[in-house]
Amino acid sequence: MIDARHRPIKITTDFYQLGVPDFPVYLSMGDVGMLIEGGTGAYFTLIVDQIKELGIAPQKIKYLALTHTHPDHIGAVPHLKKLWPHLQIVGSSGAAKAMKRLSEKKESLKEFLANDSAITAIQLAKGAITTAPPALENYHFEVDHVLDEGERITLSSKVVWRVYHAPGHSACHVAYNDENEGTLVIGDATGFYVAAKNALWPNYFESLENYCHSIQKLSTLPADRLVLSHNGVVETGAHAYFEKVMAVTEAYHTEMLERVAKGENPETIATEKADWVNSLTDIQTYDVMFNMAKLLIRRSQTASTRHNLFTLP
Image 1 (cartoon, one colour):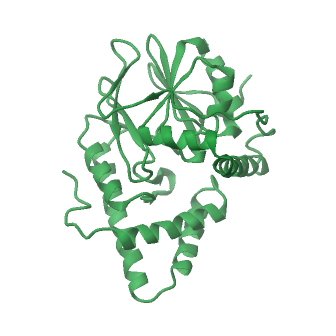
Image 2 (cartoon, one colour):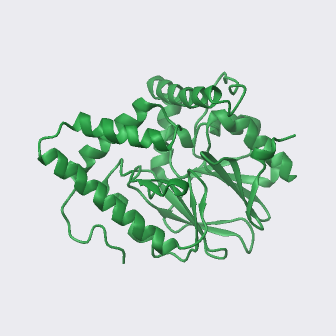
Image 3 (spheres, rainbow, N blue to C red):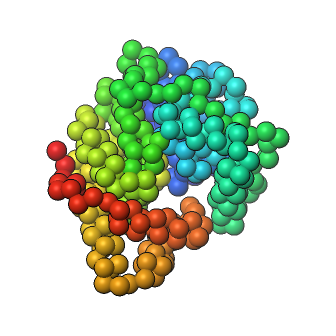
């Protein structure tokens, strides 16, 4: 029996939030089903139990769709694939390359496992879980089907997801849009948002230009509901949310450049930002937050000065 705190959340008639708010996984059901996001190893067992709670036969779930391949978004994939070999993992060409590296390069796998284990340790320490996921004899990572821009994933005549490449947060990031329901899964394409604290941390880890271009593209899609890779769903006001993201991103970028130009040490800036992010969430270790904050400074320094970068269409 699942703890009441961990019951699946019904978002629409055929769309559910699984996992936990920090690391949600989504399930879309038509004639067949599709999981969106690969979760973390820490919550693999919970995801399985939640699907059982819904009374959905695992054999009906055909796809597992990746938004991107950062470790906290693929941690449950090898566990789910071992349990349910019929699952077809789908993602971008960049995701396919990244997953292949994990399967073929020991150092890449070692780095992934260290990150996934660190997340598990945090969840254990705060009592969110009581046991760590079982270690696997072999960790298999493979994208079974590479998604093209505009491709449709049909779950039924009424449940059809269209794919949109959305790099910037990562090079391999994609978004999924169900036009019938007005639901757009944006993953981490707009950064890390904590609605309860009215806080948003821009996450243009791959490229500021690509990040802004992707947000501009996503803002034109027919969607009322925005589904995030952390902290749930923005149910209303999609355009206002995208406007907020752009304003916060521009302010963050400008602040980074101005402080560095005044001679402030980037390490000091990164420490301050890591402290702030650490006050918002504990989903990663402090060292990870610090390194990501340093990376954002570098991305701001190498970004173009093209006009209208932060303006929505």
